[in-house]
Amino acid sequence: MAAGAGTLLTVCLLCAATLRTGFGLHTSNAVYGETIVMPCGQTIVDRLLFGKWKYEKADGTPVFVAARSAVKNKTSYEDVPEYNGRLNLSENYTLFISDAKISDEKRFVCMLVTEENVFEEPTVVKVFKPPSTPVIINQPTFMETGKLNKVGECVAMESYPGGNITWYRNGKILEPVDEVISIEYIKARNSTSGLHNMQSSLQYMATKDDIDAEFSCKVTYYMPNGQMSSESDLAVFDIYYPTEKVTIQVHSPRKTIKEGDNITLKCIGNGNPPPQQFLYYPPGQVEGITGSSTYPITDIQRNASGDYKCSLLNKNMIASTTVTVHYLDLFLTPSGEITKEIGDTLSVTCRASASKDVSVTWMKDHKTLLRPSFTNLQYHDSGLYECETVLSEVDGLRRKETLNLIVEGNPRLKLSKKVNSDGKRKTIIYEVEGFPRPEVQCTSMSNGLFLNKTDERPLGNAKYSAEIIISPEENVTIVCTAENRLGREIRSLNVSAIYIPDRDEPNGKSEDSNDNAKLIIGIVVGLLLAALVAGLAYWIYMKKSSSASKHVGKELGNTEENKKLEENNHKSEA
Image (cartoon, rainbow, N blue to C red):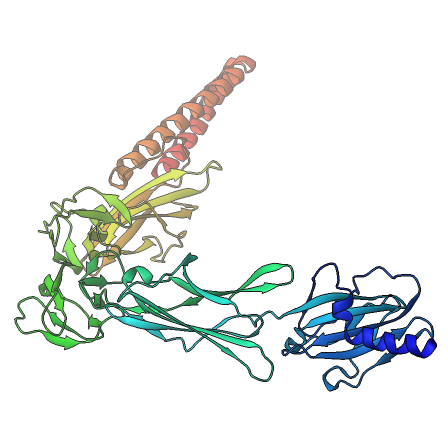
């Protein structure tokens, strides 16, 4: 019975598929290179003898790979080269296959064997591998308008199962359009690994609207959890297009151009790449001058004003601009240093010539002045005159001319005096006027010596003043001389030694009469005082004396009175 039972079990294993089928087809999804997990799918039955795993070849031939004895609790693996070292069968008969490969996509069957039955549960293995991140290769350096340009090839490598590649422009899908967009897709399978390599090429007719446009490609593929995608880096291309318009610009140091500036004309074509050579036409130039995109003009002059043009070398698309060179001239007649004499008249003109209407302003010694008059010149007319004009529309364009007027004249001298408060000293004051500045010297006629004077102080308008302090012991005459290269003037002033408070005498010419009047007044006052004293003394004497003695005293008194009168006369003469 035992032998018969074993024979029957072997036969049953070979024909298990016909004896008892599973209840459904399971699928086990795995990621390439990871571990495949296949549960048996059957509930562990009672009186189980052992369980086995097998897979089926394309022709249906079974290949056993692993088994586990429920009685002996022992696991064994068959010698299958492609699965050596990769299998692991757990106690619940779950089969693990490490390092999943594309070749593992098979139909595996879990078999559970009892004394009465053989149970089978099939599982289909699906392996997935994501492709590499797509990359756009063979990109051009630029694209030209008006023709199909190869944008590049989008490549995604080693995926399973195969995926799809889509092109995008600024985030929008590109679809094939005749003679505008052309897309070719190629998918190749590696015979060794079984992985797919995908490639899609794009040809595109660019326009100026594609300047700064962003091109990209995206690959979509499947993984165990559904559809996935991966996008390439953005590609931006330089778009070449022909010139459709030419413009000319003027580059200068300031908004407006003035004579003497350096300017540059720049001719620009709106094509890409822009043209590098042009023809330039200055005012009056019929034939163009070949030059680069810039045409420099140095030290530009007023006669260079006019219309400037430029064009492409084929003389198409001519552009023009107007250049105005501003200028400003100022003419002052006379100018520089001019010397005139007091009372003279000087004819002065200041005239401006400019590219726009301007006016002139005057300044004297850096102070604003209305239009000056140069008739009947006086010392106060001397100074630095500036005639200036400004062209306000042009920054930094101003002109200035100067006239340094010098008014000269002979010396004019005035003397005056005043008595100091102590009554002993007198101050001689002189005022001198003239230019060049006169040299003044004063002497005393009593001894012929030069008198010391204080420092001259300016009174303005070529006039100066100084003082001489003296203490005369007798009447004296002061003589002052003022001299410059144009002439000399001499003035004298009499100064008395007697102190009589009086107002200051402003003019040296009346000094003699004033001194004589003061002398006479002094003598008269002295005589009156002497007579009063003598009369008082005589009255006292006559009252005390007798008549005889009165007679003798009278003669004596007369004699003394005569002597005093003689003394007074002598003092008067002195």
